[in-house]
Length: 166
Image (cartoon, rainbow, N blue to C red; front, side, top):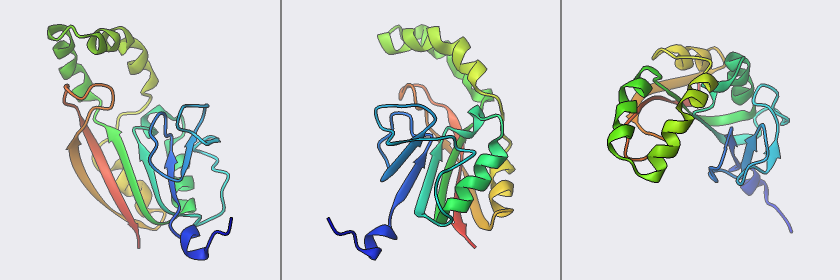
């Protein structure tokens, strides 16, 4: 099979993909249903500017060295970044909703709350990610979005930074 240079220019990377099938290359620290590369976000096994776009949703709050991961993500990204991190303070505000809707998903989520909270090492302020990517040559725009990756009925807020190579 022949791959044109034009096709190679449009390859997208999903760092910390979990079960998310977005992107041509889906990387996670462990084997998941969606991952096709196993590697750490802090040490990406790709050449500089390998990807047109890179996405990292709900990843950085789990990493010991999120700044190193940002450097690596920026290094391998040619044009566009899309990064989200949760506003962790909102998590506690929405926990009570789980109690009032005892559907199987919510019961499972309640059981996993202590584990999930321990997995979040960092809490981010609005400018943290934007500042980090600007040091790596990207200009970012920060927005606050309502999104919850583990239960679509419970609102939660995230900072989303979309960065363009400057």
